[in-house]
Image 1 (cartoon, helix red, strand yellow):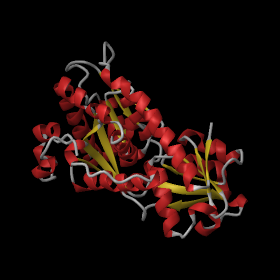
Image 2 (cartoon, helix red, strand yellow; image 1 turned 45 degrees about the horizontal axis):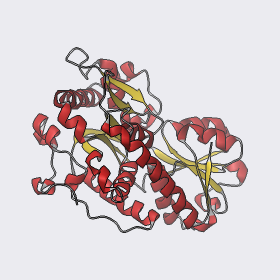
Image 3 (cartoon, rainbow, N blue to C red; image 1 turned 90 degrees about the vertical axis):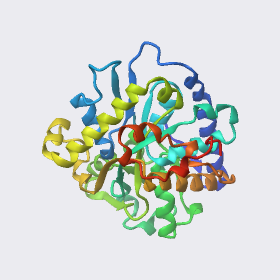
Image 4 (cartoon, rainbow, N blue to C red; image 1 turned 90 degrees about the horizontal axis):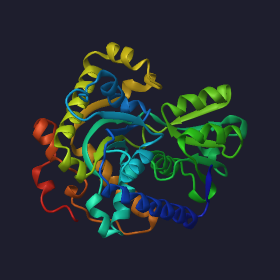
Length: 347
C-alpha cells in the first residue's frame, strides 16, 4: 500500500519522522541473541549484491566450519536494515541512505546507541543502476515534463536521494511534484494503476518496469547523480560474540568478488543469469573500507539532516565503522587512516 507524502516539505518531513519512529521500535530486537537460528545475511536482488548471492550458492560462507550462515533476500537495503535492527538478521547489505537515516535517529535516542549499526566493509560501487522511469502515455518525454506529476519511490532510500539530485539538476521544483512512498516491489503496480506517473528505482526493478511499459517506457539514468556504495553492516554484539563467523563472512565475500573479477562466465553460470546482469559492466566489486565508503555515509547524513530539518551531527567515523575485523583478515583492504578510528565513537 502506498503512502502519499504530500507535496509540501512539511508533509514529507512528517513522513520521515514516522519512519524513524518505526525504526526505533524495531531496535529492541538488538537486545536479543540469535538463539538457535542460523546467522542470517539479509541481501537483495540489486546487481551490486551479486557477491552475496554467489558466496551463498558456492558455499563460501563455510557451512561446514561452524554455525550455519544463511542468505535471505529483502526488497531493499532499507528492509534489510529493519531486519538487522529487529534481530532477524545479523548482517545486512544496504546503500548509505538508510544507514545515515538510522544514525540521525540515534542522535535523538542516546540510550539505543549501543546497538548502532556498524559498517564492516563495502563490497561494491555503482553509478549506473538507478533510474527514473516514466510513462510517455502521461505526457512525459523528458525530465522537465515531470513537473506536476506523481513520483513513486521508497522514501529514505538511495532512490529518494537520487531523485532529489536529479530534480535539482533538471530544475524540477519540489513543490511541483507529489512523492508517493512505495516499496520497490509495488512500483510497477502503482504505475499500471495510475497512482503514480513515474517511478525512481534500481536494477532489476527498472528492467521489469520498462518491459511492462513497452514502447511507452522512458528511462532517465541517474549515473551523474550518485555513486552508490553497497555496504556490509552488522552490530557490535555480532562482531564481539561471533568473531569466527564475521571472518567467514568477509572471507566469503573476498572469494566471491575474486570469481566475479577473474571468472565472470563461471559466476554467471552459478548465479543463473541474475536479474539486471546487463548492467554489471559498470559495477565495481571490491571488498574495502575506503574513502568512497566513508564519503557515501557522510554525504547522506548531510542530505538526511536537511530533509528532517535537523542539525547534521558531527560523528566520528568510529561511530559507524568497525574497521578491526577487515583489518585483521585483510589489512590491505582498509585504506582509511587509523586516526579516523580514534576515540570512543560517541561523536
